[in-house]
Length: 148
Image (cartoon, rainbow, N blue to C red; front, top):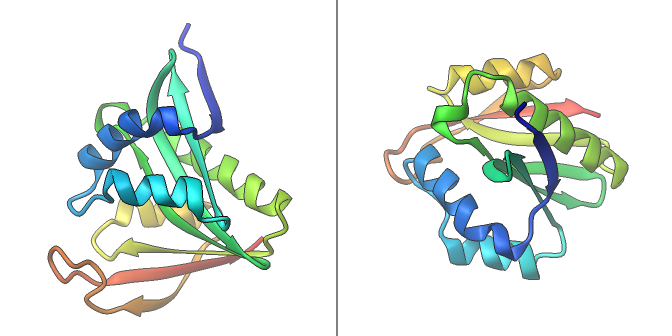
């Protein structure tokens, strides 16, 4: 049976997380950016999802006062379609609430309707558009929000 666990990310996870990052995004974060966020940014919180002791996804959030923002969330392409993203997102929602957040925001590509639909399942609603948000192609980002 496949065992799936979610746990805090460690520095040892960075190489595996970078595989997820580069397979998931057309403008991925650099390993250095994630390392700095993980080790020096006191507002950031990262988790990984493992399946059979292999990192298949991760999620990051910043919490400032009572406001949380998802920085990134990704599941390996070959592991999508099994609701792992929903499980990872639910875990992060619970985590940021436990840490005192009362609201959560995120940006998502306007073309990424699959992700938008998942976020809506958690009560997130569109509240605005950030024009030309994604530098690699100038695509707009939909800003979504939920009260926790």
